[in-house]
Length: 122
Image (cartoon, rainbow, N blue to C red; front, side, top):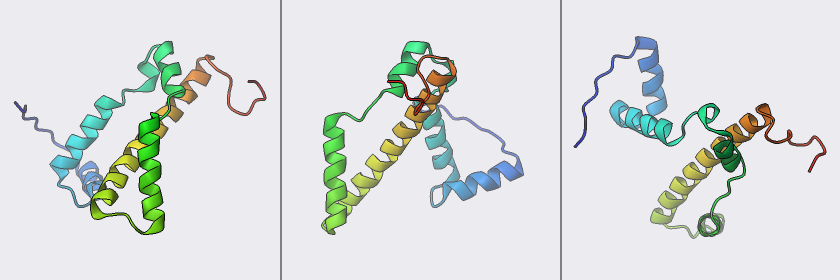
């Protein structure tokens, strides 16, 4: 059962949130942002083993194949409306995972768990 939550946003934050929400309603956009925040916890608060795991994460092969196929259909001009929606969803998830991986790599380097990229070490 959903739990109602009421928040008051300062005018400047509300204006920015409305602009970022685009065509979505503000409550729908805020709900998505809360879900994303919970799904992607602050990397700085994770233990070393989880930071390293995230920094080395890759898309599963089946997801890589599905994304490659959708991108090929788009490039060929044969992608369906359903395929375009699926491509948008998968690209959004890919970007989210890529940003999370980059944040984890930055944190792993900060903690001394791995060397910085491009420093010549393997």
